Length: 343
Image (cartoon, rainbow, N blue to C red):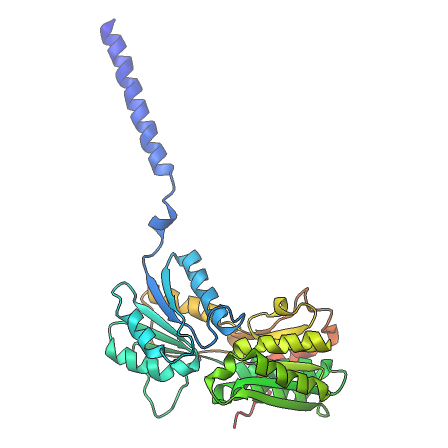
């Protein structure tokens, strides 16, 4: 009897052990065990996080990478921008950070310098200023967008939507980059509505033009008073001044970089979206997969790198006919039927 009793006890123990082992095999791994240990650094452009535009779009890319890839990140806001190089160096000096972003074309020279100093690290610059006489380092990725293509469509929509026959443009800093926005916008307006007049102004000739909402508001009020009923901006944080003016004058504004509808609900005709967040995410993903190649990477209409917003928030402001025309012109831009002059 004792033998039989002991036999059943042994069988019971074996069953318990097998059940326990099966349970362990069926238990999913923790998120932290399935994700990467990559850490990324990023230095913000002038205006910093909270600009509701360019910088926030870059930060969104970091958050997406953290959520989907499990990366960690560290950011630095250099304030007025004078400490860009030291901020990049501080991040590059950290052993656990392998990829560093500079957000904005004003980082171009700084990134080039720091990349030479830290050849084992990888660097990426959003809106890198490509120069034919300057070589891009093997450890540098120059990310650029075809802002003129998205701005052309904004011009089409604005030119066809204007009731007064006048529209406006506000740039942050007079520079080759922001002139791409302006050139595309103006040519789009004239393509769709040759008789439409365009008022244009810049906040500053320095990078401070991206963080001066008061000055942008002055320009916007002047353009609205001059007959413009729609104003498009490419001015970062300064654009918040345009939105204030739009609310005061009961006119329309066009956002940039991100969907800026929430900044002035009912007064945002649309926004020219640059997929900065997607560019940041994809660069991190490629880095994690050891596919970082350096060199120039361009995002345009064909790559869905630029676009305009049309959804439930603003479809009452853009007629179906105008939306259809914009979509048709979009395809003409992609297949080369329409050329944009940047000279």
